[in-house]
Length: 144
Image (tube, rainbow, N blue to C red):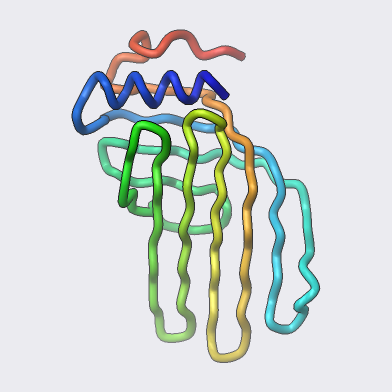
């Protein structure tokens, strides 16, 4: 996970406002709970997550259909969150990716008049592709 920290630090040092993308392969656990079945269901999951520093969005592979706005990038982490309200439901997602450890924690909650669903993600992520500042050589080779 030191690799993610080096990438993130390189991005932040190289530009006051990081640009480019970072694609992460994430594995870990999803815990799901609904209002009709309050006993949490746990399962192992794998998903790709794309951090787009240029657009300031995260494409989270956990079932959120839209790019999620990044609201803060620090030397150690990126924080993202979104909220949507529709006619039949309300959806909230919030998460953090820690560069040094590669840990990602995220919560997604969908609620409507009939049902409520919560998903909690605890994932370990590793970079698979990066094009930071438009030059992938800035941060080294992608290991297979």
